[in-house]
Amino acid sequence: MLSVSGWCRTENRHWLAGVFVAAVLSGGGPAVAQPIILAPDDPGRIVPSLSEALESGGFSNFSASDVAPPTADLPDATQPVVVELFTSQGCSSCPPADAMLSRLARQNDVLPLSYHVDYWDYLGWADSFARPEFTERQEAYARAAGERSVYTPQMIVGGSETAVAPGPTQLMGLIDGRRFAATTVSVMREPTDTGETIELSPLSDLGDQIDIVLVRYAPQRQVDLTEGENRGRSITYTNVVLGMQQLTTWDGTTTLRLNVHPEQFSDERFGPDTRHVVLVQQMIGKHRLPGSILTAIRLD
Image (cartoon, rainbow, N blue to C red):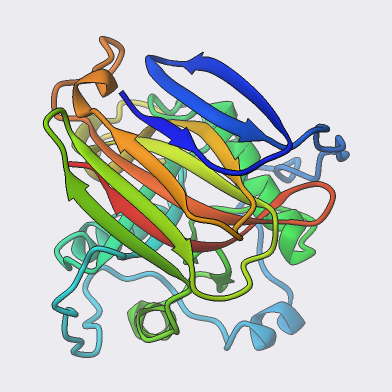
């Protein structure tokens, strides 16, 4: 069982998918924003304008065969760099990005996560991993960046850095920028008889809107596609996100304690190989749009 204790204004106790959260939650709910454009009317990919490409460092394509510059894993991978890929089984441009994500998974200090979106399902193949909330997460990132549309494949590094179809060199540059950035949250872990205790302490001003989110993901899944743009292909996907749930919010000013009991994470809806990570992410503005991922804590 995972419980959370900290300072807040009003106290609520509730169950979330088998995880008990005893937390102090801030009052009021987020304002509802109008949806952004999800996809063009035709089945073509969204092509960035020249100005967008120049701002993001130029046109570059995903290629699984490209060689990334040599980088060294840091010895302490307790706070890995999170790389989120928004992809779709029905997108012909996505397999090279999926392969790139698989290569990233070999690095201990990088945590790649694959979110499958549903807005290309009309092209003839319904993505078996897609969920509306993953599309909503990508929408929220787009709003935070001031973008008017979403596209696949898209990689977001650390919740705040993105580029139009980055190649390996550009992507590793973004990852290295996060690797060597100043640490803003201290993470202390201590084993207990039934699990472990995790304490989060601020090392700088974090703002007062921080979400603590549990992510469930499958290390690997293979899919044989018989319809759509990728018909006839067998594709292996890495770190496929299966579900997300917000555990609590944190004001970022006092120490937050998480009491983790892994046996309570079991859920018959997910396979026995399911893994879990807690994301600590800043939220921006009155609409609580996703911002920088301050840390990621692997639970297994």
